[in-house]
Image (cartoon, rainbow, N blue to C red; front, side, top):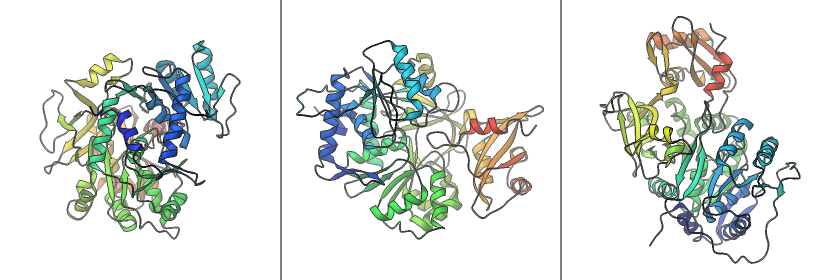
Length: 521
């Protein structure tokens, strides 16, 4: 019987492509074929197996974008264990919390800032069965108590566990900007369903060349897995640099990539400073937020109509809804408002918008987005109450406020927690940003609420200007007054060269609130 587990699908996929190039590291151009990738993953699986890694074992990794990051992630799956991926930009407080809650048997690391935190975890565990593995070649100084990794040699003779659909494949901690991280549990069947769903929605094949520069422990990782089961040649950058990114597209004839809008805007601005050739591109996946019509026009002029937006979240494996390439093009010419949408439900996903009483809302009315999908999480790790609150009758309550239009497109209006209540009026920050971003001098903006003694909260925006443009606070406020309701007009405007981002590339509004909360009133 065919297993639709993540373990089965990923290794069945990898086995099909032999000598084809699997991954190239940039800028070194070190390349590994699919056959070599499988051989090395088998060796790493044997290495982990000898450390006691198997079903029910948690293995944490904190590795920058690299071959090692890809291979160890696959080896954990081949052992039937649970992967706990940690981003290299996580703060030490978050890393300490996750380690103490998830209690991984093995931690594989290659980041200097986290050495003392992981050493503390090792010493607190007081358990000789806990192994901290330091990877050489990343410029990290490891304490003597860590084990420096050496690739095992010789023929491997072992029988690896076959995962069942209910086994826990992934324990992925949310990168939220408030509270403590939440461990999101994904089963083998759930991850398998997400790969199948994404492959149907947006097929890739062995003619594609994928360029990734965002952390593969987040959204880029889902695209990486899908690419590898399809024979795609993946090009992996350690981090994003706009100029190097554009050079890579030309040199390696890249066809596909994933970006967040802020990165896309930097690429657009960079093309104005250099000679470029992006004619090979045929897919740009983006997420985190919609793109403005003005910026989309620039994108079409540079790359062509190749945009694909995806709406998802950690709890739903990034497969909630899609705005396809054809939908982008249709909206651009016929209904620019639809560019603010996140498309229509994915094939394996059901979506409802409900009011506070749980009733479906009508088109053009606001409601909370609730989702049902086989790719959905099993629940939050060690948080049964939160799981019960978030999953009711098989539906996941996203906390996003949305709206259907009359053509069936879904619009995200805001997060419940990002809604500003000013003078008793509900102000959706995304709606304020939509208006501000229409100003010709504005490249990007973020709307936040700051405490106010009379109104409760005051609406403020932090703005990044386009290169070579200037603007004043008064101009932005006047611009908004002419285009939106009085209660949505910003009371203050601040200008920054760049906005602070979370480790997954979203604007860090918590940090902005810290910076500006006491500067207005």
